[in-house]
Every structure is written in C-alpha cells, then in structure tokens.
Image (tube, rainbow, N blue to C red; front, side):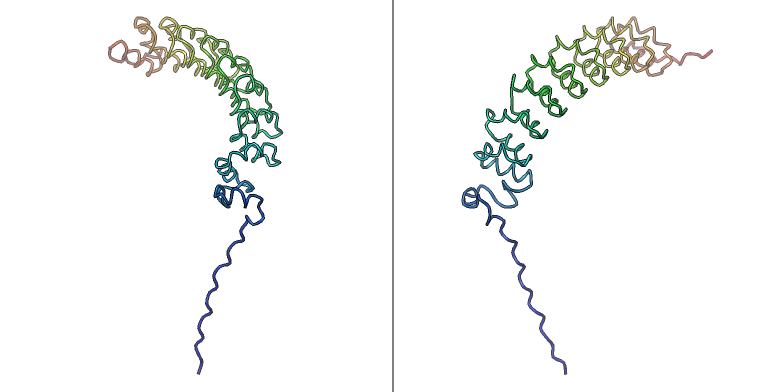
Length: 259
C-alpha cells in the first residue's frame, strides 16, 4: 500500500536585493522620498530615471555638470541654472552640447553656430534672435539653412533665393512677399517655380503660363489675370485647360487636335 505524499510547500520568492543599501543618497534623497529605485534614480543608467531624479532634486543638477557619464551631464544641463551651463558649450559629447544650445541665449548661443554637429547648429538656428540669423544663412548643411529660411526676417530672405538646395528655396518661395517672388520665376526646380507661381503678383504669374512644366502653369493659372488665361485654353495638359476654364467661367475646352 502506497502512501500519498503531500506536495512540498512553495517557498516565497526571494526578494530582489535593495540596490540602495550601498547608495550614498540613501540617507538623503531616498530618506526624503524624492528618489526611488527603478523610478527616479541618479545612479541608474537610464535617462528617464535620471531626468525624473533631477526634476525632483534640482540642487543635484549643477553638481552633475562634470559627471563622467555623458547622459547625466546632458540631463544636468536641462535642470541646472542657465548661467552655469555655458561652460559645457565645448563639451566632448554632441548630445551635451545640444542640451546646452537649448539653454543659452543671444551672443552666447551664437557662439555655438559653428559647432561641428549639425543637430547643435539646427538647435542654434531655431532659437537665435531673428536679427542674428543672417550669420548662419551660408551654413554647409541644408537642414541648418532651412531652419534659417523659416525664421529669417522677410527683408533679408531674398538673399537665400539662390540657395544651392531646392528644399531651402521652396521655403523661401513660401515666405517671400508676393512682390519679391518674380526673381524665382527662373528657378531650376519646377517645384520651387510652382510654389512661387501660386503666390506671385498677377503680372509675374502670367509669364509662367508658358513654363515648360505643366504643374507650374497650373499654379500660375490661379494668379494670372483673367485676360491672360485665354492663352492656355489649348494647353496640352487637361488640368491646366480645366483650371483656366473654371476661372473664366466657361466650359472646359476639348483637347487640342494633334497634327
């Protein structure tokens, strides 16, 4: 006769060791409840935890500006007093310098306009006072110049109409006043010409009704004087003919006969 044995009782799981027993902050921020392992921790290798720690304990941010861990320095820049972070504008790590560029102003920020990292320079261009932006309009990176074109005062914007990158020139065409757009009628990129044609003064737009690209002609139809639209009623592109007829209030003409 066999006896039935009871299964051994499961032991409770061994609790994870408390990582704070060796932490120098256990009698400081931990005791005050302003940090917690796995949530807000200065010594964790987690940007989110470090950020939460410094948000709750800002007095520690300035102390960490010289920390050997780049991410801790970058986050410290975010929370430290602005007047203390400028000395990290030449930090060896580009992420730290990007963080610095979000805190500086005026001439101090302009001093970072030649940083080797494009993201740093983009940040600078997005924050500089408009009157200082002109110094960055010839940056080597198109993304930096694009940020400049988005914020440069209108009076200085024509100087970027010949930018080597079409993406930048498109932004210029979107922002230039209508009376200044005629200079972009001969841009080599049809998308730039189309943007300009859709915003030009009527007389300037009329000249683009003969553009070789139909998208430019279509954009010009919306701006050109009504009397100029009769010239495109026999346009080879049906969309151009339809747009012209719609503005003239007439039926769309049939396609032109081919010889």
